[in-house]
Length: 303
Length: 303
Image (cartoon, rainbow over all chains, first blue to last red):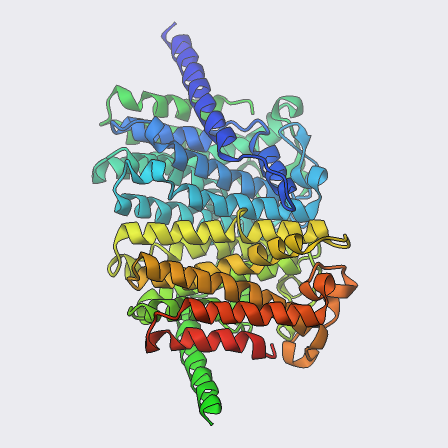
C-alpha cells in the first residue's frame, strides 16, 4: 500500500517537473524566418521528441533536497537537457551509431539531413552555455556560484566527461575489455552528466559542502546504475515501449555490463549502486524523498 | 618608411601574441593513456595546425586598447581559439564542406576518422566554456564580468551567431541571393566570433560602456571585412600560401561578396569597412594602435 502510493507520488512528481521543463524549453526557442530558419526547426524537433527530462528533473530535485526551489534552477535544468539532446543527435549520425530511430521517431539527420543535424547539435550545445548566463539566473544566484556550476557542467559534458566516454565507447567496440573499461565508459558517457545534473541543483539550492558531497555521491551511483539499466533494457526491454530497436549493443559489439560480467552480475551491481545512492542521502529529510524514489525508478523503468 | 616600420611592428606584435597563445594552448591539454587517449591527440592535432590565432590576438589587443593587460585574458583568448578550431573541424566533415586539406595539412577526419573528428569538435567547444571558468580568470576578474563574457561568446558562437551563419551558408549554396543574404551569412558565420573576440577583451580589460561600444563597432566592421577578404583570397590567392585549394567557393556554389556584387565592388566595400573600423577607434590613444594595424592587415593578408 505504502509502496504503491510512493510510486504514484513519483509519477505525479516526474510529470509535474516534466511539464515545467517542456514549457520552458518550448518558450525558449522562437521560430523565425530567414536564411537559417531550418536550424531552429531542427533543434526543436529533437528537443520535443519525448525525452524523459531526467537530467532537468534531477537538477530540480537536487535543489529541493537541500531546501532550494526547483523553479529557480529551471534555466540550468533546461541547459542540461540541451546538452543531452545535442549528444543524442551527434550520437545518431552515420559516422557514430548510424541510428534511424530515436524515441520512436526518425532521428534528426533522417529528417533534416546530416549537415543540419550536425549544426543543430552544435547549436544546442552552445546555447546551453548561453542559458546558464540568463538574467533569470543572475538575478537569483551569486555570480560565482553560477560560474562554479558552469565549470562543473562543462567538465562533465566535455573531454574529461561525456565526450571522453563516447570516444572510449567507440574505440572499445568489438574489443574484449575488463570491467574497468566498461566502468570508465559508463561513468563518463552517461554518469558524468547525470551526476552534474543533481549536483548543480544542490549547489544552486544552497547546499553546504557535506550536502553537496552527499548528493554528488548519490549522482555517481545512480549515474552508473542508469547506464547499466540501459544495457539491460537493450536485452530485456520491449522495442515498442523503448521507441528504439533492442539487441543493438550486441549486434554493434558495444561494451556493456551484461556483456562483460553477465546479466545476473550486472543486475547485482546495479542493485548495490542504488542502495549506495539511497544511503548517501541518509542525513537528508523528506525533501530528498524524490531523489530516493528516482533511484528506485532507475531499476524499475521500462524505457 | 613609416609604413614599413609599422608593418614590421605589427608582425612582431602578432608573433609575440601568437607565441603566448600557442604556449598556453599547448600547456592546457596533457596527453594521457587510457580508453579515450586518441581524443586528446585529435583535439591537439587541429589546435596546433598553424592557425593565425587572430581571435585570441584580437581579444588581447581589445583588452590592451582600453588599458588592460593582454596576458590576463589569455584563458578567454584560448577559449576563442578552441571554438574557432571546433568550427573548422566540423566544417571540414563530409556532410559539410568535405575538405581533405586545411592549412596545408590533412583535415582532422582524414587523420582520425569521422567519428573522432566529430567528437574532437564537440570536446573543443565544451572545453572552451570550461576554460572561461578557470581560477586563473576568477582570481583576476569580477565573476559577473566573466558571466557577461560567457554570455557574449556563447551567443556569438551559437545559433544566433556562427552556427546560424553556417546553416544560412549551406542552405543558400547554389541559390541566387541578394546582398542582404550574403551579409547575413558573413556577419554570422565569421563576423560574430571575431566581434566577440575583441569585445570580450575590452570588457575584461575594464573598458567603459562607450569604449566597449566603440570596440564592438570596430569588431563588426573588421569581422565582415575579414570574410570578404577570405572570398577574395579564394579567387586571387595562392593555394600554397593559403594551405588549401582556391576556387572552391565558385565550384561549390558558395555565396560570396564577389559572387553577388562582383570583385571590384567587393573590394570597395571591404575598404570602406576597414575605414569605418579605424574610425571607431578615433578617441583611443596609442594603445589601440595594434587594432588599427590589424584592420589594415585584413586587406593586405595573403593567407
